[in-house]
Image (spheres, each protein chain N blue to C red):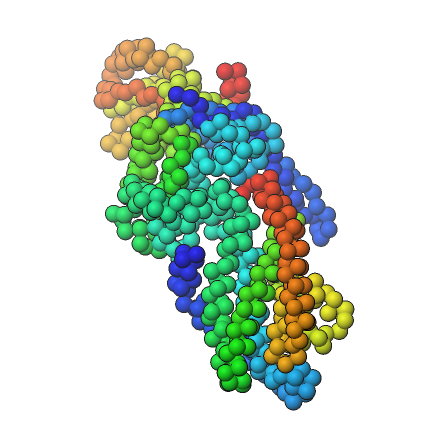
Length: 258
Length: 338
C-alpha cells in the first residue's frame, strides 16, 4: 500500500487534480445550469442549494471513478508496462490483486476530495456541515466498495470477449454518470431510468446522500437503500469472480504479452 | 543431476482474425511450436537458439505458465505446467524483457518490494533478500537501489530484472534474451551471474539468445529451434562436429595469379573467390572436412608458382555456422535424417 502512495505522491499533477476535480466539475455544472435555468427553480424542485448538491455529486463521482478507473484500466496499464506476466505468474490470485489495487488510491481520493465537501458544507450549514460531510465521506466509501464487483465484472468481460472493442470502456464512464444520478436527484428520475439506476449498487447510497442534504431522509428509506446497495454488491460478486477466471483463461490461451 | 524442466511434444497454434472490408473476417493460423521436446537438468544452462519467430518465447511462456499449450506436456520441478500452475510458479524465476516490466515511478528497491510481496515473501526476509540481490547484480554500486526505475539505463534494467527473477530463490530460471541490447560490461555481468547461478547454486536455467558467442560461453547444452521444431541439440562442440564442410583453410598470399583459382578447383577443392586484406595480401579460403590433409598439397602448389604464403590457419566452425546451417533450408532438410 505504501508503494502505491510512493508512486502517487511522485505525481504532483495527480495530487492537484485530486483536490481540484470536484471544484472544477461543480463550476462547470453551475455555469451550464445558470445559463439555462435558475437556481431558485432547482431549490424549489430539489430542496437544496445547487452548489451543495453539485459539489457532493462531483466528489462522489470522483471517488467512485477512481476505483472504477483503477479496476478497469489496471490490466491494460500492466500489459503496456510489461508487468502483467510477472503478476500472472505470481502465486497471488489475479482477482485479489486487482481488487486490492484501487484501495490506496481510493483512500487518497476520499481524503483529498474531502477538501471540497467539508468547506462547502461548513459554509452553508455551519457545524452541522461537519457531520453531513462525514456522512458523505462514509457513504462514498460504501458506494465505491459495493460498486467494485460490478465494475470488475464489466471491465474484465470487455477485455475477455470484446477483443479490440474493449475501448467501449470509454463509453462506460459517461453512462455511469447519467445512470447513477450523481448530478440528478434520483427521486425525480423518470421511472425507466430509475429502474435501470436501481441495478447499480452505488445509486442507492447516492440517493441516501442526496436525501440527507435535501433534508428528505427518513430512517427506514436510508436503511432500505443501504441494504439494497450492499445486497447488490454481494450479488455481483459471482459474475466478478467468473469474469476474472474467464479473463485469466483467455490470457493464458493467447499468451500473456511480454 | 536430475531433470528440472521436461517438455514433451509441445504444440501451440495461434489464430489471428483478419478483417476484410467492414463485416467479413477470416482467420490466419500460425504454428508457433510444433512438437518441441526438451530437458534441462539442475546445475545446467541450456540455450534455446533460433531465428525470430522460431518459437523460443512461446516455449518459455508455456514453461512459465503464461501460455497454455494445445497439446503435449511440460513439467517444472516435477509439477505439470497446465494442471499445477501455482506450484510451478513458486519454483520459477522469469525474465522476459530487459527494457520494461517495472513501475517507472518506483525505485529499484521499491519495485522489488512490490513483486516480493506479490510472491508472498515475508517482510523481513524480503528486505534481506533484496539487499543481497542488489549487491549480487551490482545495482547498489550503480545507485539503482534508490533511483527511480524510469531513470535506469538498459543495463541497470536488465540487472533489476534478473534480481526479480531471483527474489524467490527459485531452483529454475527462465531467461528470454537477458542481454538483448546491453552494453558489453552489463552483458558480461549478466552472463557471469547466470553461469555462477548454475554452477554454484545448482539452478536449472533455460536461456534464449541470438548471440552465438554468448551462448557458447554460458550454455552447457544448446537446442536449436526453427519454425517451431527442434532441429538440433547437443553441446556446442557436438553441434559443430555435425555440420559438414565448414572447416576452413585460410591462406594469406602475397600475389594471386588469375588462373590459380581454377587450378585449385581442378583438384576438386571447394575454394572461394579471394578477398584482399587491409595490408594488401590476398586471402584465400578453402573449405574441407579435414583441411590439415590438404595443407601440404596446397603449399607445394603455391611454391611451384612462386607465391609466398605469409600466413596460414585452419578455422574451426563457430556456433554461428551451426545456427545458420540448421536454420537454412539445407540444414532443415538434413536435420531430418540426423
